[in-house]
Length: 79
Image 1 (cartoon, rainbow, N blue to C red):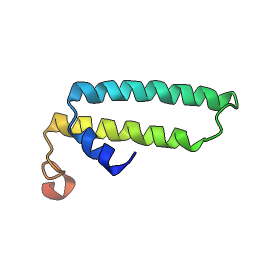
Image 2: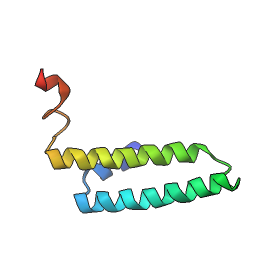
Image 3: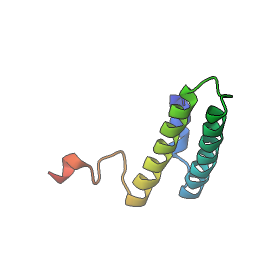
């Protein structure tokens, strides 16, 4: 995922992000099936898809907590 795409993703609503998580999980499932059947040549796609899902989930959690730019609720600000 490129930087421009990451910037655009941060502007998405919670509903859109949750939809992207579901779609990415389905894609990950399909990639895993292809890998098991020996049809997947680029196994690095599995790792990339997991990271994409993690990014979406992180953004959802930040929006739910109201974190802006990592300043509110970060570990450093709690100390």
